Image (cartoon, rainbow, N blue to C red; front, side):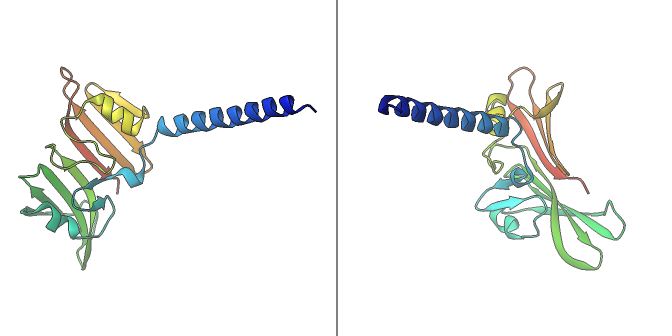
Length: 170
């Protein structure tokens, strides 16, 4: 085989590999919300399901309200960080032990999701970060991956995000 022909075949093979990598990356981006995205990044990374308590110190002053748990034998606590626009709901066994984060609600732009989405961002940024694998109802977008969900409320008029809710079904 001639050297030119070999070079052309090598270039064609390299091009085919590059195109296939681009297509597989696009497929991954089309529905990229995952359980590892279900959390916030603020002076640390705090995920849904975590039993870490570092988020309390990182987010600052809070109020805590206790509820009877939604499942037998548990207590639920809602921490409100008013100055940051963050609410964190935890679940704890009535016997004690670590509290597990089950819900995070963001209502101000001060704290982003792990991927970097903030209240006030446009829907186009949400799509660039999480893809198009959402279900839309009115001005609400819902991403789901297994037991993890992210609900993004927007202003229909401005297409800006007004609230982000990250949660795990229990």
